[in-house]
Amino acid sequence: MKTRKQDCRKKPYEKVTFQYKLFVVGQIQNGQISANFASKKYDISRSTIAYWLKKYSTLEQQNTGMSKQDEIKKLKERIEELEFVKDFQQDVIADMELITGVDLSKKLLPKSLAKEIEQKKRKISKENGSINALGLVNKLSTKDSNQTKPKK
Image (tube, rainbow, N blue to C red; front, side, top):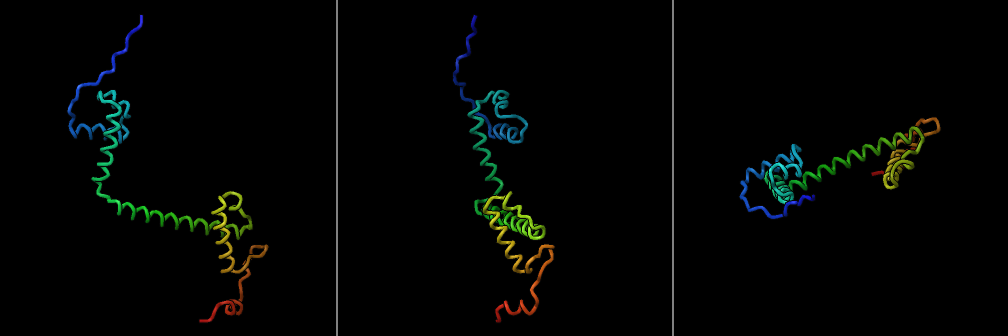
């Protein structure tokens, strides 16, 4: 004997309060329950819960008061911070490669980053002089450095 599945009929419309919607959405966003479990527990369709999540998560962002301009400003500051960290790391890698004489950046990093590190190494070696095989720095004498600098 086969059992028949229940017909898929729409439920009659029930007005749900704003607080109830926020309660369900809050539980899902906090990770207390999943959307599927909420659908079963509160007898709400998954599409309705997905709609509530989309609608009320953007409402929550608007209530935090962060405008687009503030968000852009914050992201630009974060970009500057990350660029500073990247430059610092490249300087450390360049110094390490100059001291050890091993070019790890060419082997391990993408070509664009390896080129930037190579440029930093050239800049450092021009500023500090050259490094001999023993790792000792051959600095320019003051007489040589005065001749290479343009006079003002």
